[in-house]
Amino acid sequence: MNPFKLVGWAGLAICIVGAFVEIPYASLILVLLGLVLGVSIATEDSVRVIVTAMALMSLSSVLMHIPSVGEYLTKIFSAAGTLAAGGALTVISRNMWNRFKP
Image 1: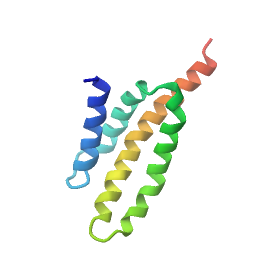
Image 2 (image 1 turned 180 degrees about the vertical axis):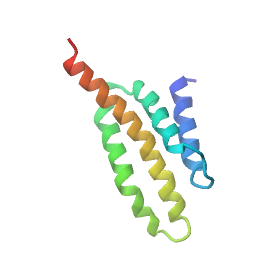
Image 3 (image 1 turned 90 degrees about the vertical axis):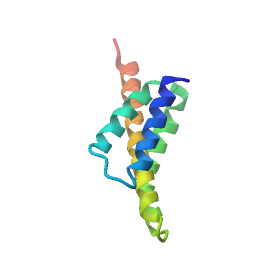
């Protein structure tokens, strides 16, 4: 199995488990895992990753209105947005480097 897929599965596991229990430094771990995942993202998928990160971060709070499970879904999708944001930062940094490298 691809090591980047393992990192992605670990990140998703932290997102889900973190909705039910407190994980110290979970946001930091998710951003770092996202930064690692960003290395494996193909150039043609750059826009998709950036839009996914923005959508998850901004729209996850809508799920709060679902009775009894909304709070957990909001936490899961918000954490997934943090993971995707790390990947988006890597993609953006790589694009800037390729644009301005000597």
